[in-house]
Image 1 (tube, one colour):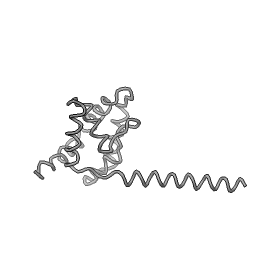
Image 2: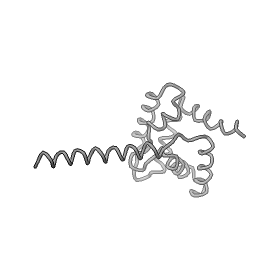
Image 3: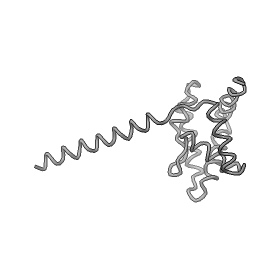
Length: 137
């Protein structure tokens, strides 16, 4: 009887884990520069042009931020995978995310962690990514 109960618990946990990972994987997709610009415009209006609030709104809409854990370093690294430095980028994002973590001031946390992470090479990649929209016009 106990063996059957353990087996049911095991399979239930496995199915829940599979459902959560499948849902998360199927929902998020790499953002394009076009998506970023469209969401940015919406966020500017929602946040009344306040920089930190606009940034947090944008990265939430893009699936790159949660208020519980901050930036999703893995997703950010996937966007810039073409630079072949995913591990290094993830380390930078995670470091800045932890260094600036402030759950009582979420907008500031998002803004300061972004500023920290983009102060080096990653900042150039972000500008390059965003300039793709300029080329499309």
